[in-house]
Picture 1 (cartoon, rainbow, N blue to C red):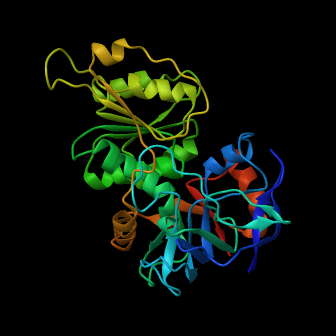
Picture 2 (spheres, helix red, strand yellow):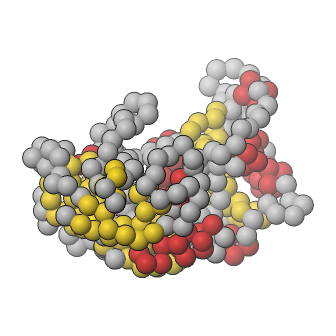
Picture 3 (cartoon, one colour):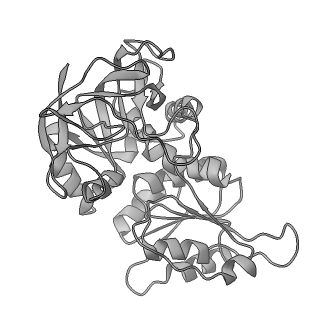
Length: 350
């Protein structure tokens, strides 16, 4: 079958909208006709990553209806509403195996194990999660990345509990999802850190109790220490820049000598683009912990939980989405995201 997709043919180039060809699905594949897709900052990194092969298909969070399934796929059937995600339903250890979708562009293999900037997509069944047919076909797409990444870091990687203190660096879609999850479990205080006052004010709608604008002469670490009498229990970096990766460890509280006298935990969510330097004394004398969080979700269980929270008024997906574009506007959407013009999350609607 033929469909229209956003394709990057050359490193750093704008995307082109052209036909791609999808073969019949393999035994473990699913074809999905999409209604919506999130626009994630990770794709901007991919567009400037020379290690990735071109032509390149992009996007990794979308909602659609199953149109075709391979012979080995049993958990979804044609007509089911589903979320396409980048996190496998069955956990794997180490790097994900390289897979191909079979999609071709101008007679060449189109690269990308998962993609959602297209009207129809074909992916591994492991990346397709069934949701109830009465769920929203637009809002639900961001559960496939922004929500699972931010909220999952709070709920699963860190295991934040009521009354514990939290700081989140970066008030974009992922950071706001982390803030909202921290609010749902009863964390306090919840400190949002960003360089933009508008984004910080927006973060209060998702549960931030305090904000720190780290631009200018403000030292974010000192501000957090002042607000929490020495540092937070958990600090999350939803940006992945050198400075913020180093700051989140410094912003956690110290432990001390003895067993079970641990300090706070720093959790890196954002994909790092630079090398960092960490003071080893923060680990030894303070017994602090530094962890990474990569798609911390149990998709079959968590996706429906997040959607239930939305229906119960706990997780305002509708407020998190602040910009909507058509597929034909994908380059505009990427430009707006790169320039910092988007509060929360942007989506494509098909």
